[in-house]
Length: 488
Image (cartoon, rainbow, N blue to C red; front, side, top):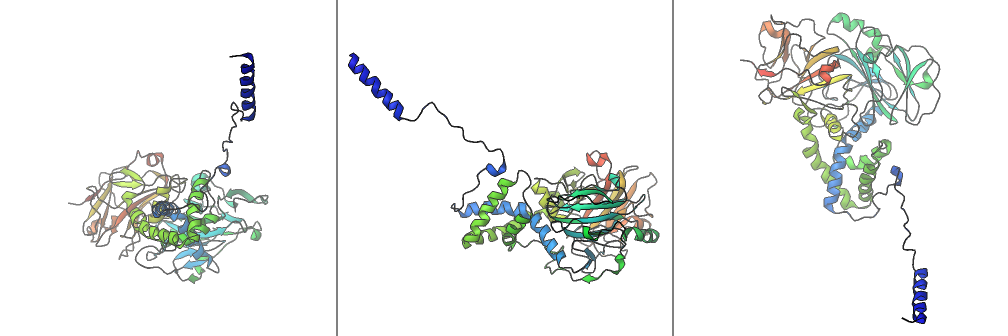
């Protein structure tokens, strides 16, 4: 090639490179470091029916406990003052009310209640004002105040097992930035502005203890910070007004979640209950379908149909104890992560369906079964024995009980007015070898055994162990519940 041609080619190449992008340059796109920097579904994206069904089904499982919680709070907000809903269950809004004894056996508002404690209850709207709550001197008596956010997670440790001292405490919302008033012992913060409280105070079954606990119960009081004066308030809970219970259809607990209106309610619930860390993408994903449904009646119709189907296919099976938690030995199951669910959505929803508002495991370990040791459904036409070997009753620092529920997790009315047996009972009879045998059946197992008998319905029923302030052996599964055996 001649010098002239070489020069022309070189010049042309130089010009072409000069006119082209810098091929050696690489621009780094910013890698997201916060949830806000992660793009979500684009508005207006086409959605097939199958896609809407998939997201809707998942959203129904995930959001069921949240809608359940918020709907309960709405019912409570209608009470003009602390009282008893249906005349039997404590109800209050931005305050609390208390029972003065065991919960009524004929109530249907709450599934799986117990007759070991005096319950209190109240919903708080912490975005309005912080709430003061009082702790009297309970002495040696077991007690625990369970405080739940709108996700049904507990957010405080207040109780005998925590060494909580008598005094005044303050409950605040997630955005509260005020100063702690003088006279307040400690502050607890909810992760949501909506909070639910359930104080539980142990009472044994004697008339003497029922009387002795009354001055303590009268000092279990929650009230707005603006009413705090540093003096212990006292309420006579025996004079609470009665309010009608919410209407419900069918047997069992009041229906707090209606699949036909679920997707009308979920958008507002998600505004009230912000995402936990790591849930932002989930909220965006579900929210994109909810936004589409608000604009497209066909998508909304698909969501409603999906909710109705999911109620029967996904939610109803949680009512069986074998579908809750994990095996605890000898045919019993027990929840994991109760009241500290985090992203354990399956157990959160399972408990919301079968047994709303568990305590944390360190406060109460729950163990339950529908079946005998052969795997057959418990039925009152049989006589069952539940034998704790000598020294093998549930190891607890608080108390334990065995409760019998009918087929819808409520008490079975019976002539003895007995629904549980355990620490609270002073007339239990132990066997000669030191073991304790309890009986469950519709018919009496015999006059000599009636002190240890839990009367059952003629049909199906379930059994439920509560271990309050359980020892480590229960928490780690070293201790296992006894077999439930058909008597010979």
